[in-house]
Image (tube, rainbow, N blue to C red; front, side):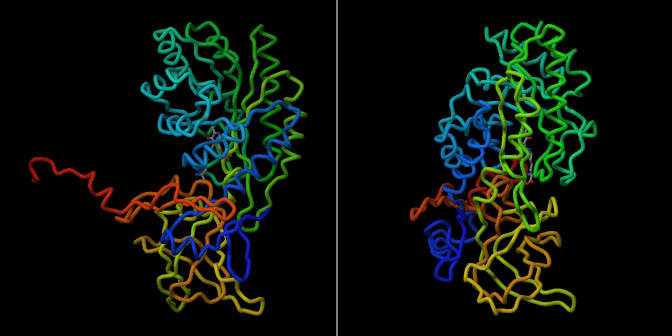
Length: 420
Ligand code: LLP
């Protein structure tokens, strides 16, 4: 199902016209299709059938409690990277035993909270973290189920800032040190070593790096077992890409085949941690045109959404499709424009060089592929409000995070006594 399609000349989210949502909630606003998320989840679960794999949704992609709950109801666990995400997953109803805690810099406080919550797995990323986790678990009289996140030193063709699997990157424990540190973990009170984890990057479109990474994990499992160490679980991370402009998302069947071929025969419980793939194309950022203007070189469409609402184009050069909410006639000419926001930075663009039919001031545009790493990366920058989020399911819609007025944030500021 394409959750965002034109019907009767207007772009809809499932059964609801986007202009209705713009009227009801104001703009800019994120609009998600619950059905689209559920469909993606079910498609992945189906592709992985027979592997006994557990899907732990990477909450960082979209941490709204309603989004996590929709996926948890289908059976998803959660991959979290902070105490805040842990709290969100629990509030959404994810069973603590279905929560994996990843991340390169877990604080003492976060580790304590995760231990007390009884989460299913810690993915540790350094020897120092392993020691701290063991010490803290032992003090609490607990044993932390622990995997080592290995860095397999594999290059991935994605944006620099979201590749994670080579020795240039801060992530994981170099795979060549894994056996020594795994053995150390298995002798550490408070730790029960359960397996290995890897995550090589995000928005991966070519499946071959997955194959290399999973094969490296398999080799590592065999080496550990050869040394008499038990390895029960493998966490394969996330990273499956989606279609943005001009890209083709990899097939789930191909991914599942790779999993089967490389690690399927090891008798390990398998976890995957998809984020973007489940929610990315299930959301749009809906925005209204404020003004249009031209310079001798470019045409600008100035909208009410900006880089503080959707940072991906500015930060990664990501290209999101822009769709007019009123369906253009086929004969309608397009013009090359930059869709930009009100923030005072040249880099504040949502799309550059987009071919769009003429859009009037007051018209609505939907920025596609905004369900992942959109609202979660939003800020109050430039004294702007915090963008709201709306969930649609069939003909129903609800605010799942209301727009936050700038005054909400301003109210947190305090004057030091010497400035009062
Ligand atoms: N597991 C771990 C350990 C991760 O670090 C990540 C993403 C995932 C799973 C989920 O990856 P996904 O399936 O979503 O690709 N803000 C960036 C993406 C950052 C991804 C960080 N880690 C963007 O907007 O492209």
